[in-house]
Length: 397
Image (tube, rainbow, N blue to C red; front, side, top):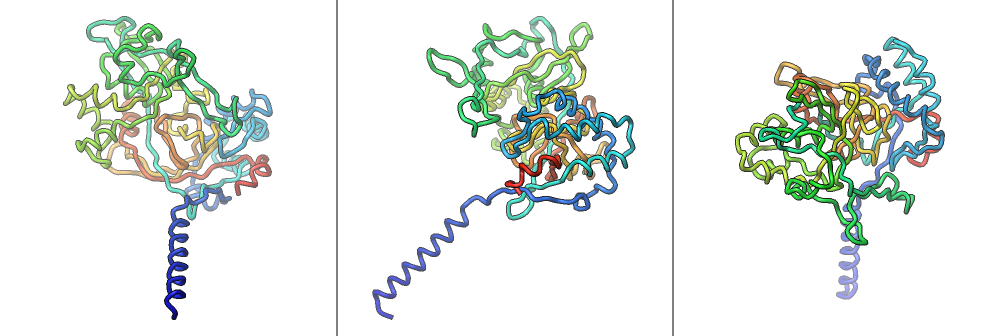
């Protein structure tokens, strides 16, 4: 082979190899694929009675909304009217058997799954409603403020400026003629909002407040013994950083043992590190007093322990049923047990990000605290899409 021809041939091969390499670096396109109920692991033996009760709670919201109100996600373009037929029938069911509720979901919904080259596996954790100690007045013991939303916090709905930015908000404050990021956790702890936000209650330690922010709601037992129920009301817009990650990066624990219980034990044993560690999470949550004792989810409905799931709204619409297949900590033994259950997406969370990512609400009390604090397991879910919305969603299939 002539030298010039050989050089040309080598260059040609290199271009092919470079092109192939760049192609392999491209992200795989995400799509959804129809499934059948026979493909759902555990569906045949499922007890869906409590799932129906949780779904009926979401239906009350859908049925009050205007037909064309957007209630979907970035990925699923749903409107309130899509839920009307199923919800109207669901509200007629009073104490139905598991057989009837399963027939209901099979009648009105089609299960679908997220797929790249293969189904997308994900992470599932748990959360609970904590019980804390507090006071309505500041004292030497109770000196950690639980703030309401500050008066200078501004939330901008970006969909008002561009439709492709639906479900996107910016949180900040006005500085002169500009919108700037809101104060971080460290700045708030140094007193940045003392004159801008009222204090709902005073707690006795920073660790409890940090965990309360993660859970989103809780019960504060006041000095006179009366309960004060508080729930999520807003957030400063800063990105969430998990305290577990901070301590893992610090080398004091691993992914395998970074449970809520372990995190608390470490911080309580090293009080001089509490401020520095907690301030690595710039995100800060604001609260409000709640009239009801049940925790409220982002859909504005009371959460059902064991059946309400917090999800990433970028991918999953609130109110959507999902068939979850994962594991969770055993109540008494140091082992995991299967969790295959029809959940309802009724909440969100700053740490809940990803295509297949969920946070199971376990309720209040020691059992809920134990399960939620230890749950960090891989799993998968199938989404239940209303059949009458499938025509509009065909481009996703």
